[in-house]
Length: 358
Image 1 (spheres, one colour):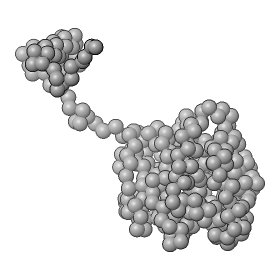
Image 2 (cartoon, rainbow, N blue to C red; image 1 turned 180 degrees about the vertical axis):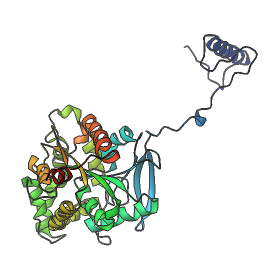
Image 3 (cartoon, rainbow, N blue to C red; image 1 turned 30 degrees about the vertical axis):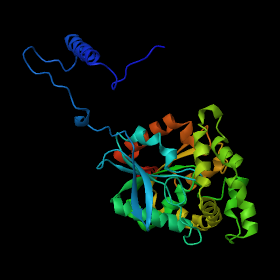
């Protein structure tokens, strides 16, 4: 039977042969024109990889204490770059931004949190911790203050990120420099039957009637459908998405936490008129991406924003609820172009142009 020597069993003669071969290989590489080869008679230095400039595109994974919890977040880009806060939706976590963050990290400083009950953040017992959108917004606010990620910034709001982001804007109106809205409903127009059922859930957390209505949204086949509905090519949507979401939903307390949030969604619909009035008054620079096949909202949901924001840019996408899964290239290009034209070097708005010609 043939045997192979290991470092522990190799003979001294074999170790010397290996060292000699290694030296010869290094010499040959240098003679062949290694980029670090120096002139004859000078010392050849091998660069230490740790001395290299850090790659700003690499996402970092951290936690921050907020509201008595350890809140997980992803961070990419350089501090000092324009800030962009990414607020995601049900049933995902900051995982949904895993591809967007490195694609934008060369020009933005990006942060995305896992809310309590989502992803890698703690899931406290719902009997002792209120799972409401007010509470989630409070935790995100505390986390941002703890990280000193404050001041003028862009907000990317998708699904649940819409009501959480709008609550943050109400708390800190001076923070909003511009916003990206991606399938985040703020109008009754365009709601599908699925979202309408959530909006009009009876306010009775924990009862059998409420649970029976909302349980369907947590079933494995429904979670999978949220990721696949409206996407023209299902083979472009990684099954990791729903498998990871379902794994998190199976944790202790997570199921009850999500039911409580689904039922609390009605408080968002109650605030729609207030948020719409703010849009009409402040006219924030707005880029809207709308997956046309979203399981929760029809194209009319994106178009409704234009009634209050005539200068907003609406980009319809042949996609669904999680448009980043198959429309990443279009979204990245759209964000960069919009930022350059409207935020970094702003153009006159339609309202100003009309006033100028009046």
